[in-house]
Image (cartoon, rainbow, N blue to C red):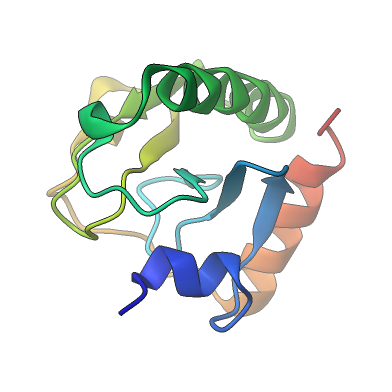
Length: 131
């Protein structure tokens, strides 16, 4: 059975897409730590990030770097933090989280609850800086 992220990539579940190419997909987290919290996933289903082939893993990081640059331009923050946890969904993924303090990277704290309209506006803002 396809993972939640594969279903998002295929369009079976809606998402607020930020960027996509042949190998990777980036979309807003619907329960973000901060505004602009984005998930970046490879299009292939691999559960554990360090089980990815080296070229796929390095490509994921390079794609994430480009997405983070767009986030940083769109969402006021000190920097964009990177987290890899991998326990939530059995599909390798990277969290890109706009940070104002170290606490913004605490994934166990209470999440924001933006409306669909707020998520759509944030996604549009970030996409406007995508190169």
